[in-house]
Each structure stands twice: as structure tokens, then as C-alpha cells.
Length: 344
Image (cartoon, rainbow, N blue to C red; front, side, top):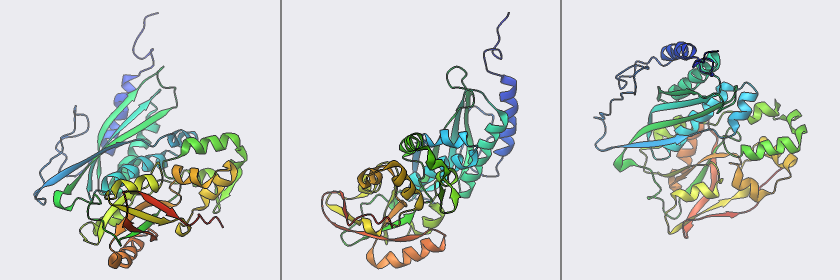
């Protein structure tokens, strides 16, 4: 029997047909795109006449082990939103405008319908945040990755005016720390979530705020660009932190000046029902939850005290709940917790 690439597990004809349809999905009238999908690399116009000193903002991300659960439950759209929205948030905390996203899809068996769903969902999530999915890589790797398994990653390019970079350097004592509500677990802590599901399988039969547990668990990671972009040029906004792995304490500290602390009142946090369910079934202690999950806070914004009410009103008008949870005091660049989490 003669061997071939197809017999070894890779069907080039299927891949080419998929890529042709991907090109149609990624068709864009964005003037910065200077060539089409199918070229060896994307040409993206880097001329920014509206910026005096443009600074590119770069980040690569993946949605972690949440993608395993998402594919197991046919939730392809949501995991693609997770990936793109996580990237968006990591870029915009610098004050950046999202520009371009490139994806990477690694799979054991290229299933055309699944890949096209992935590309469509990521393309739409990018558009929802003012960016464009410009292509990337789709790699079929039989005997390396099992058939039916998809591993997703993506990278983003954003741009910010150098003198308007938001990096926390303007934070001062007396500033207020605002919480912007998360939509759920987002994309961190899923190794623990899956362990809870393994040890306490009855959790999968639970209802969370009226929705099936799995549906609540797979709620997409919220993107905050549209809620905060109009605040970027306001002098009252002094810092933004995306709350991911490590929780509030190990993300908010990343933007604090070395001589200041953030004092966060845990009793002020508006804990989402999904975290209460996870705590109950996993018998988790508060300290571990605070370090693993966002606990209902997807983004923190540090603002001048006199600007807090205006910022809250603006964010709420964009459909995101915002409220004060702490203040900036003299210190050593750390986050201090006061009070206790309120579970009832």
C-alpha cells in the first residue's frame, strides 16, 4: 500500500477549501489591510497621521482549559468571544485602540464546519470591539493532537498615543478604585472548576440564576473597550487593571506606583451567583477563591475621587455595572484587603 499525506491524516484539499471560505468571512473594507487572506503574511498599514507618537501595543493570549469544556458542550461561539475579549481587555488597559487580531487554530482533524464557525465567531468578536481579524494560522496535526480537539490562541495589535499611555504612573493617594462587573468566571480558574466538576458531578445539574450550570459557566468573557474608551482622554482616569489569574490582589498591584497601596473592601464586592455555586460544591476557602477567580470584578479602574461619579455613570450607560470598592493610600505597591466577602 502506497502512503500519502492524506492517508497520514492531513487532507490538503479540505484545508484549501476551508481557507477559501475563511477568506470570504475575513473579507474587509478596512483601509489598513493592504492584501487579502491567502498571502504569506498580512500587510497592515502602520501610518497613523492622527497620532503624534504612536506606540504599538502587542499581546498573545489563549482561553486556557475553558476551551476543552466549551468544545465538549458545542459552545464554539462563546470560547471564541472569550479569546478575543480577553485580548481586547489586556490591550485596552494601556489606553490603546484595538486594531488587528491574528488567530491560530491547532487541531487533530480539520473539520471544515467547525473551523469556519471559529473564524466567524472570532471575526465578529473583533468587529464588536473596533478591530479586525486579519488571518492567522490553521494547523492540522494528527497524532499530535487528538481528533476533535481544538487549541486556540490569538494575538492583538493596538495603538496608543505615547503621552496618553495609561500605566498607573499618575495614580495618587485619595484616588478611588472602581469595580467593573464581570460576566462570570471569564477565562481563569477552569482547572479548578473542572476538578470541582470531577469531584462533585452533581454541580452540573444545578441552576445558576435560572440558567443551567454549564451555560452560566461558559458565559463569554466580557470585553470592556466600548464601556471605557471614551474615558481614555479624561485626566480623571489614572489606571486600569484586567482581573485575570491571581485575582484582584495580583493584577491591580501591577499598575500601582511603588509608594502606594490600594485598600480594597471585600465586603463591597458584588459576588456573582456562579462563584457561590463553585464555593459550595468545591468547599473552597475565601483566600483560594480570591486568588483563583475574578469574584465578579472583571476590570478595575482607578480614578480621581472627584471623577468617580462621572466615570461610574458613563460606564453604566454603556451597560456595565460599576461601583467603588477601594481607595489609594501610601504604601509599597501592594493591594490590601479589608472586610470580608459577603456570601448571602
